[in-house]
Image 1 (tube, rainbow, N blue to C red):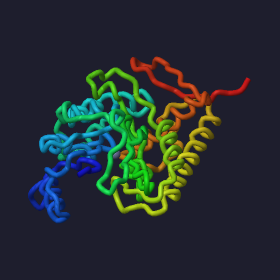
Image 2: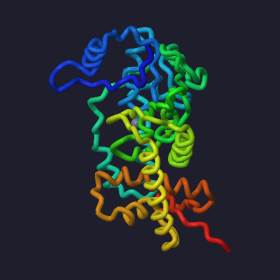
Image 3: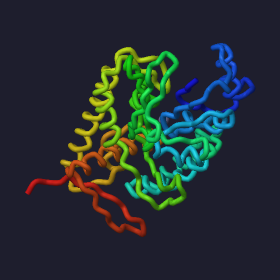
Image 4: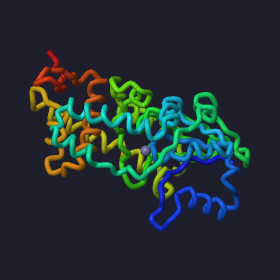
Length: 312
Ligand SMILES: [Zn+2]
């Protein structure tokens, strides 16, 4: 038996844990957790990967994108290791200290566990791209970096059904996030991974697959995938145009100034999310040689400003 995504690990308010709930669900469907031989983890996020070690202890092989392997090996520690680099990045891009301290105080995921998965149980999806399903159909794992560096999607080739993780979601536009891959592996000084350019390429590649139905990581089954792919691309086209228009009207600006201009009434607690998107679009402009970053030296910290490339 093959399972997509390992599951989230926390204690339920009514008693017991999410693992107990999962065992009960499996029982109701007529199988035992030990029947699961392969767990495909769509991406290295705590709500998708947390039970990797538990499945491994039952003998399952845990498959994830190669770039996600370090996060699964470290579990919760890898999440913690990216916190300070993320705050430093927000500061570097102009976020006021008081706001960064506010983000630091938000600890929404504190109750979630994520045990490190033993390396011997982990297999990079790049090493094993297809799995034969019981009905002789083929499940193909396709790298789809964006939502995380190691993100993948899984396609049933014959029916063009897609297990999308958080790459296509029915209720929200998934976030590109702020990722520090070297921090997960113990080096907090490494660069941020530019996620949005890859994310848009991955969504473009999914569009070309002719997907008939999407089983998302959250929410209900999607029967009209192109509507959601359109929505994702239109959202980012609009947002990208706004970022570009703001930069066109100014000499240079920090990402925070861009975020404040685009979302003037956004509550402070949500500005971190806005910064994630704005940085994504600045990455995109940079990749297209349409904008460049300049680094100044105000009071101790280096502050990054962005300016539009102007034709001579
Ligand atoms: Zn996610």
